[in-house]
Length: 384
Image 1 (tube, one colour):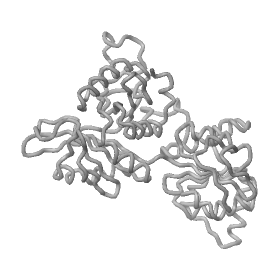
Image 2 (cartoon, one colour; image 1 turned 90 degrees about the vertical axis):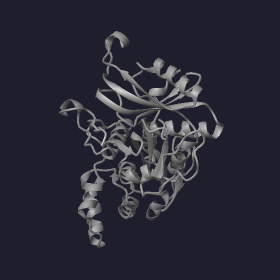
Image 3 (cartoon, rainbow, N blue to C red; image 1 turned 90 degrees about the horizontal axis):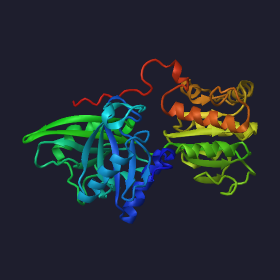
Image 4 (cartoon, rainbow, N blue to C red; image 1 turned 30 degrees about the vertical axis):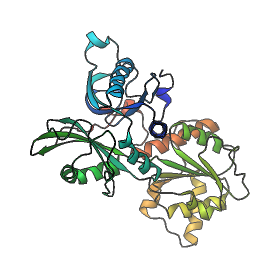
């Protein structure tokens, strides 16, 4: 059963893992660990597969659902992780007309206690790397052996992992710096490590905490923004302006709704993985909210309104002795959104959320038809 799997966000995939741990349910996780040629998803992409055939998320356009289910069933029965290669270039096996034309290696593993550190890290908004052995001729390190390292170098393998061998400390020490880098950047890497008794290939899977969006405003045009943002997996907090209605019924799809003075916008918990959108339509409140947002680590600050309005706002800031740095100007997006040529509120909301996604991925939101080379940046996973 995979009817809604393509609508599942990355955050929802991790929520399923968390729920499986809490309920001690038999779930498997499939992760792409290498791609040769073209594929629907890139290394690090995950899906959760239940024993009854229900899946959450997707690593292909659907062509591998049945074989993935069969392989996941074997993993759940054995309790051991495995790596399976699917050659989508083989038309005799898969048939013609597939959207993919590559070879993908997929790590399939049970949801067990080795995932708890990841769940805890995401709850604390900490990035980490899952380090998993996918090839090994060292008898002491089986495929599936696991360790977890935080982006600040904290090791999360002190507690013994039930039914899963942890990686030896010398191996972790060898790749710790690379693991921290992957955690910080959210990248997936493939590293080969030599031991006294064999060779081990590790996949280092950098997992970032969920991206957040803080929206300052309470007018009706906030609602479609919140709806689109939650649908794509952003963790959304709505901060209503003074006198605004702050309750869940007003913004039912938001993760949190709170009332705060614009100068207290940072109370919403803004970090370097949080985008801020200011759209109260009140000039004074927007100016105060902008000043507060600029004091945070937010990499994107969207400000609703035309350029002329921002010029006036900037003039007021200058008069108050607030000077915008080059970094501040790079963070501020106004007029906000991508140029879709639309003026309907729902279409404006779509353009705003699209811009936020593009910026968070280091892109400018241009048309793919105008992009030279592959759609996705290729990660070189050749063993080091």
